[in-house]
Length: 474
Image (cartoon, rainbow, N blue to C red):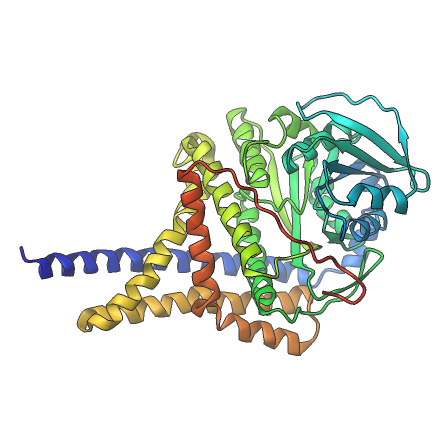
């Protein structure tokens, strides 16, 4: 067989493989979009204010500990704490865990909230790095600061769990801002679930560009940084489509660590957050699902689209690259560690639907999709049937990377109204049209680097230079 015939066979084989893959992805996301639409439509006509007030008495039975792991969060920690102190919820305790910060994080908190050193006994339910000091606010009785040796975000969260007194805890990133009713709304499925819901995650939005003062978002505005705007589009698609649809059938494997609530009892039973896993938020959710299935416990983990958590996004390519590489490395590590759940009837729909979907679309997707981009370039210049293959792939890329993004933006504008100005909605839609030409290929390359990190067994958490949120926006 001549070299040309072999090359032709290889091109046809890989072209067909990539086409089938993209069709599966497009159909999967199309189904998710439909579920998201019907779910949002059911909520659209609800009077949220009446619902919040109507169930307020029930929240007294579920006090909650809010845990904020903080490492070098000097520029944003004060705004974040003020937003958490202003949350509307009957009974909370706020625990700031300083994970060995080298900047002025601890000094800023002590000064702003008049913290004094106290002696407290902590029951170590989960092994952690040593605790150095504990501080208590003189002006806010439910505000605490725990100083510990550096051990990473997971270790800081475990310290907060050990220190907490309430049956549920909420993890919030040190740079995050919550709307005043976010905690009420993310706890609602737990309150109304009669014990069936052990975890819930809220919606995460990009704060860059918003006007923030004393921990309150006064006005939502799009950032002028195009890289940030593309992340806004990406977050909308991921949260409104993927997580909402999967949550409907208790299939969700990822709840953002920026804003999530869990039953303390069940988290302690699975050993808390994993210290040596980069994606500690996904790893906890997967561990909980595995524990529930192996012990035949019928519980749910849900995503709630309405409560909003505002978080700072990377504003440079280098920082965004570190973040996406780290996220994908965490995904691969967690999927690999629990690979026995894949296609395993013992784990029900989690093993038969969630894991295969995450393996094919999320985990291996970047390799196949990036290969599709390369294939399109080669096939376009080869002509004949390859030219048709390239056009079909381009069409599927447009549907996947553009049509679904525009649909998510319209859903957001209709149901959530986060960005109320029509001009901003049009800017988001216009930017989404450019995604497949620059932003998507870049993120695919960075995610593929996550595979290299796993193969080289490198544990690089990376770092993010915080700009901070202020009343002028960023």
